[in-house]
Image (cartoon, rainbow over all chains, first blue to last red; front, side):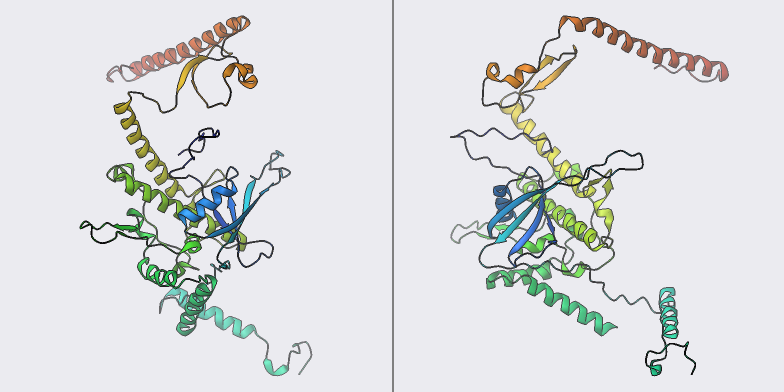
Length: 153
Length: 264
């Protein structure tokens, strides 16, 4: 399914349009502002509707969807590049999905850095040890109680 | 150091469990199952997840359909073991040859697997932009001319689409004898060029469609001299290329007489 798809025209009495192998993708984003516990924020294609989002999540992800609200975010056309041409940042549509059955969703923290211990005797380990020693030397004497070295004694 | 890393993993798991408080117990059981099974989820891009339809051939028992992933919104993120790592292993994209061996049901399921993978990559990319950290193994999501598409996934999906189109074309040719799915006609535009115009669906007949009537499918008489000029230009360019090629050949023959004359 290419991007330039034309779906059949709908008139009253036509069969329900069914899309097999949908080409649309959703992006889950972290909300910029505080959202209620059951609200999930998505970025979707401009051509998608609330019904599309609801069916997508229900059928593909088995997520019980309550309410869906959408808005279009207009992105700036004011920025200029090195040739002084106006550069448009593409617009996108944002969908706020509220989950049914009193489910809650909290955006998880994906990028917590794990403590990586490098291999024994390798270069990285020696470097790390050296850096730690340096830092230890830089720290002021705790017995002085926060007073700088400028004051003698 | 080891203790803190284990502690971190535990806190991650706890956070993960707290983040998705799903009320039904069945879902919890199945999610536990999926966590153990989908260890090398990304490695196995070469085969779709075993979304098994265990059809009972006997006919006595009810057919049991269990999809592996009943995880809901968790599928927008990577498996928790991969959170925070610099590089994540991933498999090669599907080739058209491999896809042609699969049945239609398998292709259908594979499309959804690829779609979910793409959603996951887009989510992670957006999150990494927000946190201003580099995304783990960004070659999964190659940026080409400001098109944020996962190249491998896109390629696989395109090839799948091609294979499905081929099958549909073959079926249509056999059943109806029509070569194209979308009806069209050869038409002349205002500039005198002939092109294949593909039909669109409209709610009105064409003689009532004002916008359609503004698009003229005939060439006015005053355009004919321009057509002639365009033709002359095209012929001149063609002859120029041919002459250049011929001259090049003569020069080469003079310089290196032992070369066999190339027939172009």
